[in-house]
Image 1 (tube, rainbow, N blue to C red):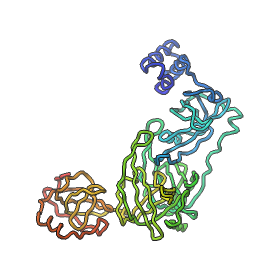
Image 2: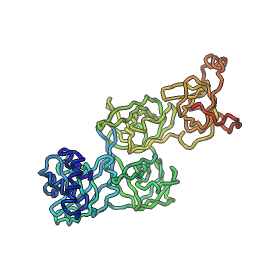
Image 3: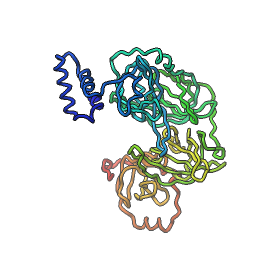
Image 4: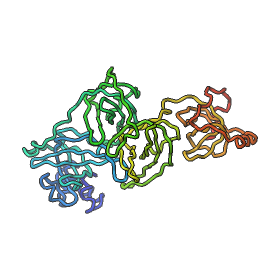
Length: 450
């Protein structure tokens, strides 16, 4: 009922719409269901469904039925504010014609639940391009539609599935999306390499990539080529299969000095400058983040613009980073810069696994966050900890960050603190890790100051 109320919510309140639906059911002697009654109420209010051939005459909002004749998988694109978006298209037809409906961002995920031959009930408005319909809401319908000859002639062929051999270079964290029916699922992005360079791999069935690690060579059956210049991209789903391959694939990063605007690149180099990340508000009202770093590889230095979750990660001068599938653009001074967004992957060498750690130091504040410092080495520490407190921490060391499992407050030693100021020489947090091991059990091990 909510679906159909969206067509007339400017004409009457929801309670009045629901009352009219109930009246319509009684008027028809309980011979119609709630959905049919809602359709009849919408028609009585002058907002009945139209045929596809009549969509062009509608100026603002309209509803119609269409049979799916083809679809595209969701693809990422760059907005003018630097944020990433998703878009997918579906071709639908009825007895008199065919239309292309466009689904943006979260709605684009709905195409995973749509198959050729499905009949959709659609609420839409004119799209950005002539003839396109921007979807406001849609759902599957049980009504029958026979597409006419004109629509059949323009039916889009199903995607061609390929067999490819690739080397897995990087795996991103799974991302959750909401299906059209309200349930959630996950997708995983990855960077892969083949004889032609690097490409993006989008997996709509995350189980396919379970227990795989970067460096593995794979033979993929049933991959769909979704490449759009300048990015190469493949997608895989439940119709695809993966198996280990013995094909030798050597992927070489592009030298920084060879990067030019307008193409996608994968590079490897050392972080030589880090600026703080900044939050900003996107055009759709949501919040995101941006950060600039500089990376050099011996052939040159390039500015790298990080968007979204990539911007909020911790970076340190001296980190070795590998960046995959980043698009190069002309910066403010005309020199190329790399944009790392949703279609890119970024890996630092310090991210490979973690180790047990026990460390004592003082909680201090730094540009990158909260640190624990012993006068020689400092590490980021997760969690909320009072600044200035001397603590002993036991946990896991991942890269430059300690993930604490146990934190114990220690008595301050004024003489030790003064000694730190007398001897300012220290190692950066990229220095050797502190001594590791399992500390002795004490009766206070279950206490925490976090």
